[in-house]
Length: 475
View (cartoon, helix red, strand yellow):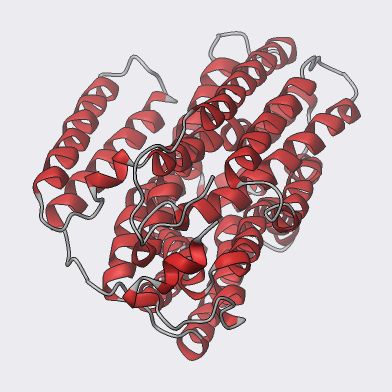
């Protein structure tokens, strides 16, 4: 790996230490932990929250999907703004917005206000994730970057583990307490970031790409809205209209970016196979791993009668190994290149999902444990490597943009993955436990096949294009 040499050759990064200040890792890692806890919190409180807001089935679908909508639509834009106008500035802005959005959720009188608050929480989380990983990518290089991105990636698994359990525990007082807690934590993050993080930005700012922002955000919003509406009925007229709108807007985004002098997403990156591998693997991770795991707790509730807290506790069997393996991934980077590690992570996820096959009504829940552990280890490896490749597959002064692109792919994939699992597992009229577990088995097979296919593609696609001095060579 030649990231140290590359960083030294980049004016914006010249002279910085390979091992950055502790705050440049601690604060972004804490923000990612909070963002993922909040992302998953509703999994443990949906029943109580829906009852408190008098939300029907359709409203509940929007409640569950809204944060993904805000997150996916804003991530790439947030990354570009962070690189151009200051990563700390965007990060602090995201923390302040998360505070305000969380207060709105805590005070929400009805489902519509709550959904709006969750969309705003998603946008705020996008600023924290893209800006935070950009800060990490700028502050660390070489082996120190591999360790730092491993810690950052570990926060994804830990947040998924802690979010539903913490929120469900706080629901013993009121479901609104989680959102007050989130608001308090977010304002502390804003203060810590403003006081302890150095500012950093690209050496040559590109300016605001307004046409790119509008077409990209609009296209992703239309796509995920179509997926959300489709979960209430795929034959509804709004679904094809939204899909067509998404195709037009995303096509317009590609056309706009190819003609702009300083695009938000440089089309030249699409000729870098490492960037395509990194972004494609993030999409597969969302589609084949996060999608099925996000809905598994609900399936356990429907098919086995688990309470949300019990289902959340069982899913920690997956998320805790994910956290641990992401932390340990840094020990492998000196001996194993990132690409094989990423392929191994996806393959282990596939093996773990396949090991959970055979769900039956009244079956023993403990038979899921081996598969959850293996899938968790795989997920952690993939998270750690994807965090690293997100900043190493782009020019060194575009770390936040790389983070935004990579995580946009991840969370668009997660939204599509949840929709896929729901359609497969609950698509028929028969909602009996036998039908639900049969559908869940099929969803696990499809997810495992997709994850395995992603692993094969990661290994098969070779990085043949010439590299410039600003981009590290990563095998």
